[in-house]
Length: 151
Image (tube, rainbow, N blue to C red; front, side, top):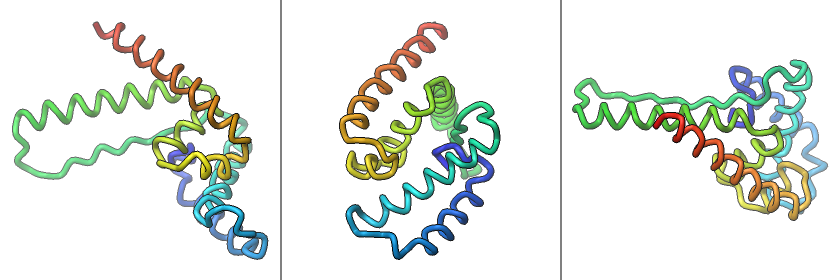
């Protein structure tokens, strides 16, 4: 789960669906059903983190599954570079504060609209806009430092 449930993602999603079903009568249609359900998933993920005593923050998983037995040399080099970029991005995301990470995940990894992000995170629109801007700036800074470190 991109919001940080990690290996417990299936449990979080299952619990979110159960809670969504139980509270279906509370869905008022003010937002899309998708946003409403994603808000439940986000809350369940937060609950998971609280119960873990806020270990290391959110854990993002980047799956790099490459199938194909005859991979050319260029594809192999490209795969290695892509894996390095993913690893650098995940490492930089892990360094961000939790709320910055959440807004980046919602807006760019889950590809939610601004309105869906507002509903999912339960924040005011202005907070989503400003936090997205600041989080992207922090992420760029972290990635630039990583690039300089590598030479």
